[in-house]
Length: 225
Image 1 (cartoon, rainbow, N blue to C red):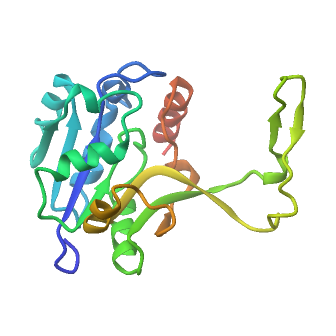
Image 2 (image 1 turned 90 degrees about the horizontal axis):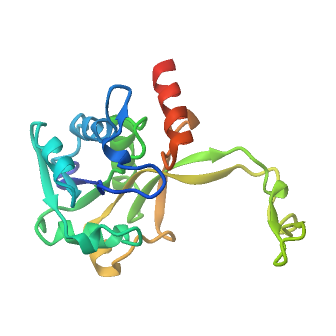
């Protein structure tokens, strides 16, 4: 809770994944990948209730081993590769209407900490924005980006030098934490990328596991730390 506003967290965890099979239950540093997001959520000082949403019975059973972790079994129709996060969020809010802030915590960001979560919630509350999202610094300069020609014969440089200051700092969403005002989200029914503040996370905590290479690199980082 923050300023008398109730905070609910949602960890969306499908059973199947396209690039890395069953990645949410794949052992990461000795424990299933989803464990690290559950622990970060449980250790938050501002979250009042944590839900794991999945269609997979193995994931749901695993989540119930943790004290004060609740489960939301979702339908197969909300577990497709094309399922939008917004629909999974609305599915949870249909049974939990009495909260003010929702935090979306993806299990593919195991190096994010409970402090990152609390910082996002606090920055949201201290701003006049309706969303707060975690970001990380993008080190590469945009003038190094090229695109493939339609006939795939060669690459051509993107013409962005004149529209962007190459001395500026650039940031990307890292997918680790999204938090937002629930009433505003229900009204818009989408994540509004024009109405957000941000929490900057260091590069070593910002990895988002999508494939086996990401997975191995993240394990290297956690063992190194």
